[in-house]
Length: 74
Image 1 (cartoon, helix red, strand yellow):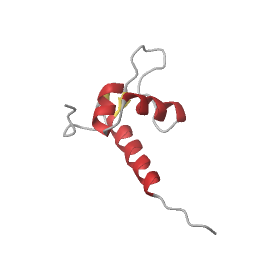
Image 2 (cartoon, rainbow, N blue to C red):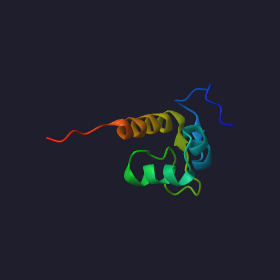
Image 3 (cartoon, rainbow, N blue to C red):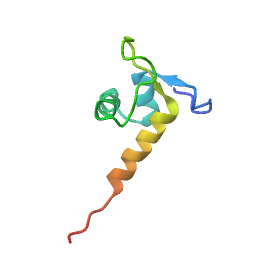
C-alpha cells in the first residue's frame, strides 16, 4: 500500500507505486510519461524511473478531468 499521508512534494515513487496510488496499471504510468503528462524525477540514465508523488497525483487528476469532458456538436 502506498502512503499518501507523507510529503508528496519530496516523496518519490517507482512506476508500480505510482500506478497503485493512481489506481491504474503500470502501463498507464509509462504512457503518461511517454506523452509528457508525467516527468521523471531522476535522471533518464537511472535504470528504475522514479516520479514525484505530487506529479502523479496531478497527472491522475488531469486525466480524470479530461475523461469527464463532454463535447457538444456545433
